[in-house]
Image (cartoon, rainbow, N blue to C red):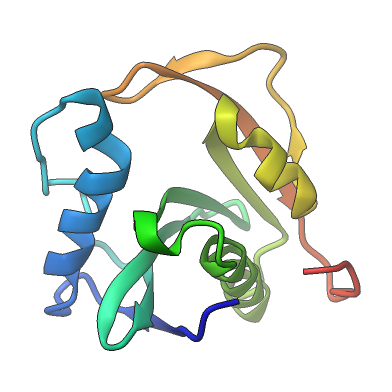
Length: 156
């Protein structure tokens, strides 16, 4: 894996400007969609994890802490030059660690069908019966979940 630093930041952190650019580059620009930075980043229930390499944001993950003891992982993004280097895996591992630190028992996400295998390798299971179009892109997604426990012996 490439050397990267993983930092939880506030929605007001100046690095969120880089996050907005990354999210657009990875999640929307490939579909010709206009940039939209108004993704509801504010709120005590929102957590923002950035991956930094050389001081630059190269990865991002948003986790919404839900009242039912679960966390909703969204907007997992890794810049093209760092895809396939382990940054995405490390983002997810840190999200799981943070979720356990704050007492969550489940993480869930809506994954693009093309990323389903990635999440399966991390221990997530598909819970939706069939795929569904999601968000602005209308790309097929599936709901996936992972029950969290103190035993983190699985391969990362």
